[in-house]
Image 1: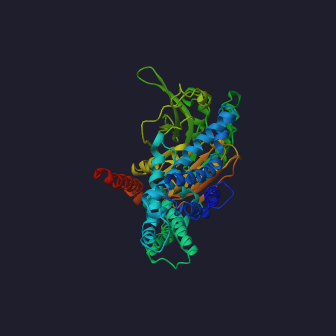
Image 2 (image 1 turned 120 degrees about the vertical axis):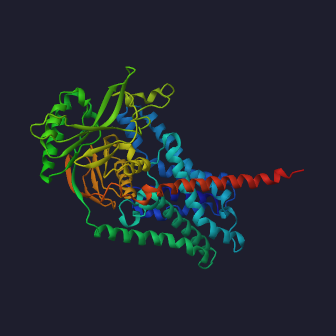
Image 3 (image 1 turned 135 degrees about the vertical axis):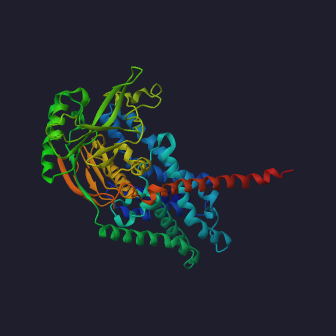
Length: 534
């Protein structure tokens, strides 16, 4: 196979991966064959360096359009010069591509994929090892990416399936990593079959065990959906409000009163559905509410209703040392019965996992050109940990914006007793890009993993109400002022959790440990000749 042909195959994989992602204009099912060209390009290639370059090429073609929203966030809204924003996009895409480059570099080192294909022992080993080794490496690297440098697990492969409930139900067993594992396994099987077809070989019997897993995925999904349809759970009516406030107007002092009134008007419309909870987006209130007179309008509205009201807002407080701390927060306001003089503020949650270069600047002195992004309010402080809010005997687990992409946070909330997951976000930063679709897809998987309904309120969209099966009950469009309501199922009791919540989340760490063990074994085997050298 010529070098040009291998490069073309790698580029094709990058394009297919992008077309499988939400908001790309393609289709999620493309993910089930997107890696096949890249795997065929590395077949029989013994040089790990050449394999790494092929993976890097595929990764860049995939991630540059996938992450193009970085240009909008930094350039249009962050005050960063466009050349610097473009450089940031390239650097982030390059960083993300390194994981795909590492995957392909490890193929000739840890598997027989780099050996010349034949009918002998090497071919049999490839049939036995490859279907399982590649998914293990993939998931292990995905987990690594979610932890290094505070983590950036943006748009893992499983999220491409968020619109196919049948294919994502197994996320309640091993998380979205389990779905990614099966997708990569199917890609590897197809690559093996195609490489044998080119050599006119028959169907390989050693592949049969690996074929059972995707079949089991579909069967489990069908059974789980049928089971959920037969259940008659307790439900709660939830409304989400989307005001569609332009990012440029959001922090304008002259627009504050108009902003509050728009939210209140949409909330009054939502009251027709008689919700138990109304949810406003992240930083819906563009001021520090406990210090601002406009907050009295919001408190009066909440106190007079039978619904709880969850609002996103910045918050600041002075600690014992006299230092002012800023938080990205969610405030829960509860109804007040006539004659009572209680404070409607029932609880507050501070965002735990902040966005690097969005809510704080790592190494700020070394990277001063990113400072305008957070100059509006100053750097935020992370919250102390998982905090559940109580609304009418319902316990709410709140995920603010970026927190929805981290499975650990939603799992901790659920394990702590959350009956309902809430995701509030301000996706106006992304502009008319593919990012709002990607962000929604990740929130949907949090719902399935923990078997909890999820209400998502986004300033400019996409706001959605999601059942524990991942089905979107109601959703808004982008860049429209709207409100939506839906009955969301609740668990029979707070202690009812999924296998993922209880222990299935260890699947991905297990894959990473297997990957590390394989690398250690490879290093040890290479060192044996040195130990016996005269």
